[in-house]
Image 1 (tube, rainbow, N blue to C red):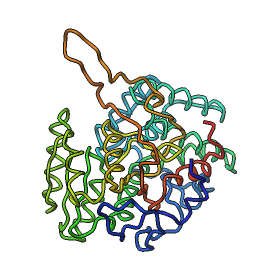
Image 2: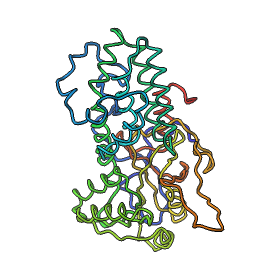
Image 3: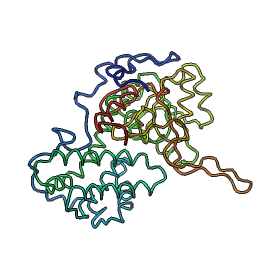
Image 4: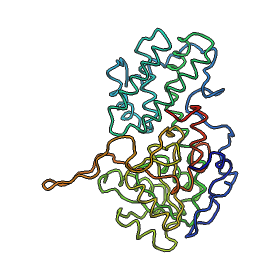
Length: 385
């Protein structure tokens, strides 16, 4: 794994022309960095990511009347799973890690805890229950681990009562969703300059970070770039929606099947970069994303086309996969049968290692994959979680 120290100030230059030259890693142009020099945090405390405000104000009136409250009006310990799914269904802008965090905050509002240890045990138990309820728990793990670490750090630094911290969390729970949207906008601002006039971007899936980045580029370039979109035959409606949205922005889009990716990348100077999203970003800078991403990354590497990942930092997770067999959960992709047709798991994913990734585009700027190790180490103090 690349040393974390090597990440400082080094990344791919979006102003560098991309054709079939090897992706270089240079100091990023200053105008591609977000205006703030401090890493943006998803937790709603401006002074310190792990320090609650010392004098929380009384709960605002909208706390009990907000639209979000209808999602979990009477949350019980056994309903955290349904709360998580209702949150995702009610707000398409929510990511899985943030929905997991909001579910845990809602839990604190309904489950009485008399001690700090009781609260931590409750959150841990329901985090495990939530992760056990889904086929791929990795994105949720990013959120639940972050929230638990935040709780531990906040409780250590809390000068007032535990109830004050609890009320602070409950009042600010709705800010998590807004912070997720802000992070996505930050990704777009940090990365849109990679897209140059007259260039062509290849992408697949339906990452909101990627579509937001392309939309931001379209506003500045008046749609004077092209997109090759790799359709997913198992998600026809989703593919149609992504293509429709991009074309509405004035971006010319060519749709291709997955089987045509190698051929299209082999066409001289037709694709200048690949930009994809991620469900989770692992501690070594790799990504867990929709199945097919690893294949596209390998083809891009062979064609010497930069492979970029647009992802928010709250998707960073303390996992270190070694290969496709080490995703951290069971996934049956090979379905041998002599009778009925083989089936692929819903929402199947694969792992793309960091050596295939030129840069990570986050709300905190553009970084090398080794940046993830740095960030996780600063948050957790160790990576043994």
